[in-house]
Each structure stands twice: as structure tokens, then as C-alpha cells.
Amino acid sequence: MIRPVADKILCRIVKDEAESKIIIPDTVKKDADDDKGHFIIIAKGEDVDDTLNVGDTVYMIPQGGIPVRYEDEILVFFYASQVLGVLEEKKELN
Image (tube, rainbow, N blue to C red; front, top):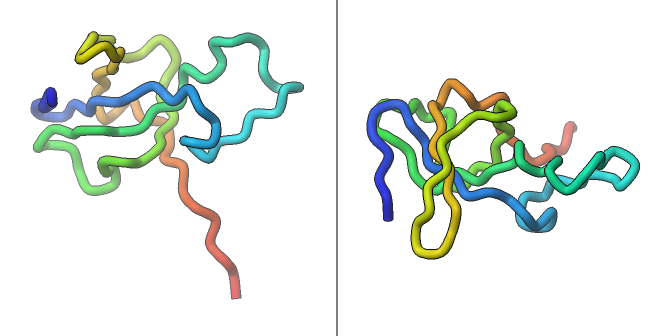
């Protein structure tokens, strides 16, 4: 595995809506590239705070990141500051 350094995170591109729990209706999709903003964090550097965790599904800025090929998969390095949001599970309100 590749270990990011400092304030970087390493992400896997989400291609399966079931994997990310993100549902994008067909009426919203413009083309096949719409899911490029959804990633799952698979590793993080030592300077990344605890608001981002391995396994989180995150939304990233468009055209951000540096893609790398690792074991027949394309992974993407980002600065932690490029994260726009983290998908959280819905919580029941009492």
C-alpha cells in the first residue's frame, strides 16, 4: 500500500453507487464523468486531522488530485483541504 505523507489523503474512485451509498438520479447525471467527485479514503497522512478517516466517502473539488496507478487500480492523492464534504449516515431525531 502507498502511505500518504503530511496533509495528503489517498482515495479510491467510487464507481458503484451502492458502494458509496450516494444516489444520483438519472435526471441529474449529465454524463459518465459525474461520479468523479466521489471517493473513498483508503489512507491518510500523519498531519490529517480526525475529521477525515479511512473508509469515509468524500466529495472532492473538480479537477483536483494527482492520479497514480497502483496494482492495476487508479488511486488519487489529494490535499486534505481539497475535501468539500464527508457523506454521513442519516441519524434518527427523537
